[in-house]
Length: 171
Image (cartoon, rainbow, N blue to C red; front, top):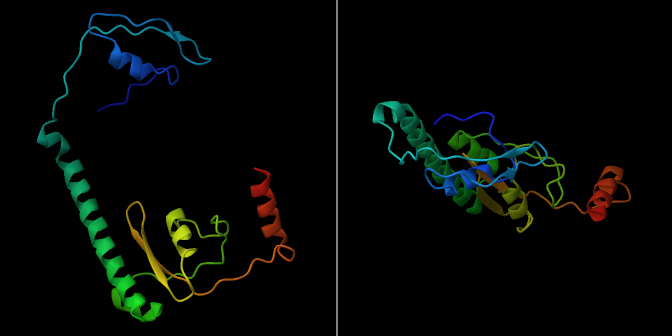
């Protein structure tokens, strides 16, 4: 469970180490621009479960995180249903105790979007009409968004927007 420091990062070191049989040595392999390596396998330790005492806290933390994630998803589904039923976002936020945030306008690529807004949510927002709502799962949380309005792009009056589009086209 501990990271071994000083191993070559390049040259498929781990792949070679795990493919080399016990008692054998690998071929000389280039480790990028940092040098070369040879792996000698003296012994192979079979995989084993760690004792419960050593992983108990990690298991409890993982279980708690999973339960929170499930609860977040269920709450997001409830919020989405309420919004799709015509409820006002501010009323739903107040009833459920969640934070209501209004984002700044952003582009289809997510440029201008608030930090923490997942790209999947940005993409989903661009697939709906004003007044409609979508839900997306994040790493540990769920997001629900309601599209307030669509603003037409005005690249000739938005110098920053024009530069962003030029940058994307140039790639």
